Each structure stands twice: as C-alpha cells, then as structure tokens.
Length: 139
Image: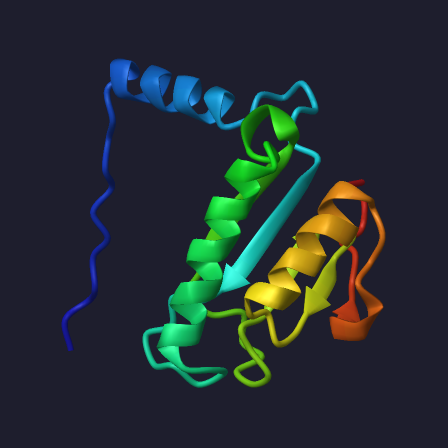
C-alpha cells in the first residue's frame, strides 16, 4: 500500500502580508475588535439536520442582518458558514462564542432573535438553547 504524501503550500511574503491586512479589516486585529463569533451549520455536504433550502435562507438572512445592524467589522461580530457541527438534527444549528451557546432551529425568525437579544443586547435566547459550553481560557 502506497504512503499518502501531503504537499505543503508555501506562500510568498506578499501574500501573507495581504492575508494579514484582510484579517485586520475583518476585525481580526489583535486589538479586541472581535467580540463574538457566530458559526452557522448550513453548508452541509449531506443535509441531515434540515433541508438545504432552509439552511441557505438562514445563512443569507444572517449575513444581510449582521450587515444591516452594523455588527460586522467594527461592530465586533465575525460569522462563519460551517459545513457541519456534528449535531445533525434540529437544525440549522448556530454557535455563538465566547459564551459557547449552541442554538437549535435557526430559521430567519430565530436568527433575528439571536441578533437582537444575544448579539446586540447580550442576553442568551433561552427558548432555543441546545447547550451552553463556553471554551476554557487558555493556560
């Protein structure tokens, strides 16, 4: 059996510098601009937790509303479209850090409540909490 080999990609200093600038513009600047990160499970290879159409609508809604509420960039909220967060039911699933709140059933109405109540006001939307699992502080 042949051994699998991994090719490493080497980027030029110019590309790395451009990536660092892009990260800073997104609020990943080491200055504390990013306050929260919301991940939405909505890009499934095999849709299990919900229909793909529902997941797509939820993602589009999240992107639009974060922009409309000025939460992206200087607003301190970073968003990530996740392929799978491994719950695989009651989706779409959203996870908000640093609090580590896992939300279920994240259609447009639930996303709006998460934006208004959690991201803007700092209150967890208890009606849709699946689990709360904050990450430990680094040693």
